[in-house]
Length: 99
Image (tube, rainbow, N blue to C red; front, side, top):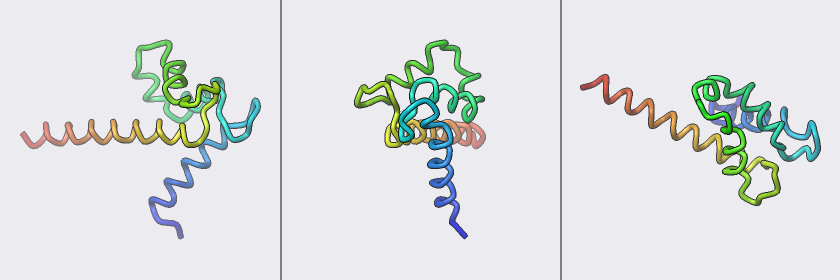
């Protein structure tokens, strides 16, 4: 039986490859695939944002090699950054509760 962390790693890989390659390279997400992934997997995050250009900005930020696609390594950067931001938010909420 996999550990919690192993399960999380498996989920990251599975989610990425569920969306990649539908319109081209099976090891990368193009802009449409990234948008579909974000809309399906991070619905609450996207709904809370007011920027209509958010997906384009995320794509530009993640696409470190500027090939107009996001590979798995670039995708993990997004997940890590969002995870850190969520952790920071929850820590702040806990600090407010203890005051």
